[in-house]
Length: 315
Image 1 (cartoon, helix red, strand yellow):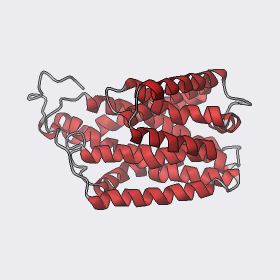
Image 2 (cartoon, rainbow, N blue to C red):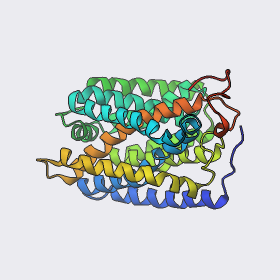
Image 3 (cartoon, rainbow, N blue to C red):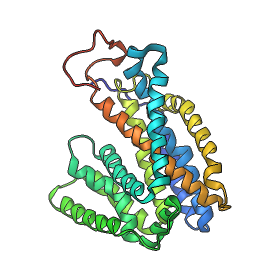
């Protein structure tokens, strides 16, 4: 597969921005709870959400050859429909939706961090930002997600605590017998220290905007097939802006629904942000799944319904 080379300036830009974000978020942990939440949530929205807004750049080469000018509605309608279904699920069955959100997050984070063909490593690495808050700060984590789910949660649900301890056993076994690469061990050690020292939302934000989002964006920049028009970091940022703006508009439209009768701005923003994040993650993962199984080794811009190869999988 052909790969784009990332200019050194783009890498330095991400590294410099990442350093400033890490320092700012770490300092925000000393603020009162609501102020700390607001800083973290603004970082998630401004620096984290745009990586998912690149889904349009991934969908275009898959759908444009087949549907022409109407490719975007073909992409956007089911995408938004799935997201809307998740938002509805939060209203109807909040605890079941929370469990599904956490499980999907482990799958998504692990696949992105470990890469294909490493399921055990993916489970361990993807489970870290979900399990460690439950193990290290159970009361704060329960309080955080009581706000998101809008249900009483004086302590973590038993299934979450049990899953966290199971993850710890699996992680220990993997570290002992899996012989992970030194860079991976160093990354996990830094993340573990962050989750130990910082409040759960701040530590998760560090992971999300410092590792997950830039890792996803850089993977698209390097991939000349999956997102052929995204070959530099600035182009990736520009390409994300239209859908990012649409996402902000949807969030603003949902704000009155969650803010009615609740004057706590930080809590309302937490609810809207994490519920929308979960809602957008479902179609985001499905699109990644489809793109990964699209015929490889070809420039997808040249694939037409008539010329589509028989072998190599189906979308």
